[in-house]
Length: 142
Image (tube, rainbow, N blue to C red):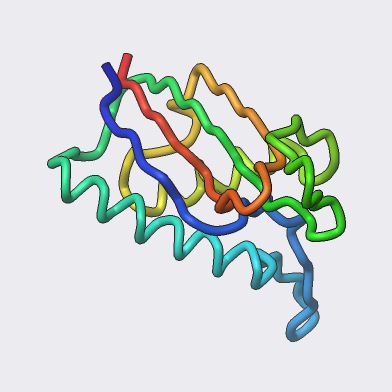
């Protein structure tokens, strides 16, 4: 049985590459704005799910399963034969999607650090026509 199952609505987002700015002669590394915004919104969803189910911060090993549903481009809609789900083999990479979700979960307080995740499964699909984009997250404490 899962410890926590939740859905993060909206288009899945990958962890962006770190950016570097030089301020007063010193390099400063920061997260790109789209990544920060998505992770902040996802962290709020995770915190709400934790409060609703009475889940506290996990301190032990974790198994995490992610199911990322990306929206189908309008150009691939078919009127007579609606398209179903298809594996997504284009960007973003599955590991970058997972990193964004794990960073959001860590900042939400679901676990102390993402190194606690010892088993991770990520599935990326392009959703069926008119299927809402989302990330379904299942967390098991081992």
